[in-house]
Length: 225
Image (cartoon, rainbow, N blue to C red; front, side):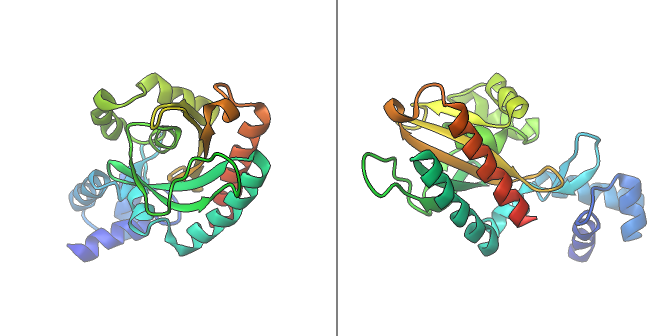
C-alpha cells in the first residue's frame, strides 16, 4: 500500500492530476486510486486545485521544514527585505495547527520584534497565519476560526489582494505584514513576514512596504521553483 501511495504522489509531482489522470499514470484501479488520493488529501500530502484536480499538498513542504535550500533562499531575501523595510523579517512554514519560524533577519538596532528561529506560534493570530491559511481548504480553516483573532472574511481579503496585515493580534503593540510564498501549482510553501512596533510599521502599511514584502515572496518562490 505504501508503494501505491508513493505512486500517487509521484503522479502529481509534475502537474495536477484528475482521477482519470491518476489511473492512467499509476495503472492503479480507479477505486484504489481514489481511496488513496482522498486519504493523502486528508493528511494534506495532496490538495485540490480550483479545478478539482489533485496536486502536491502543503504538508510535503512542512515535513521538510521547507527544505534546507528553501530556508537558505528565504534567509537571503529576508535580509534584503529587512534592509528595504527597516523592520525585522521572518519566514514561516506551517506544521498543523502551528507556524514555525525557520529563517529570520533581525534589525541591528532600535526597538524590534524578535522571533527566534524554531519559534512555534499559533495559527490563530498574526498576519503570517492569515497568509498561510488564506489558500488552505475550508475544512482546515473552519475548525480554527472560533478561536482565531481573524475571520473568514479576513482570509478572503488576503486571497484577493495577495498580502495580509495584522495589528496587535499576536502581541500588544506589534504590527505585521505578510505574504504567502506559493509554488508553481499554487500550493503555499510558507509565508514571508515583517513585524515591528505599530507606531513604526503603522496601522495601514505604506504601498512601498507592501511592495517590498510581495517582491520578497515572489523572489523566494522563483528561486525555490
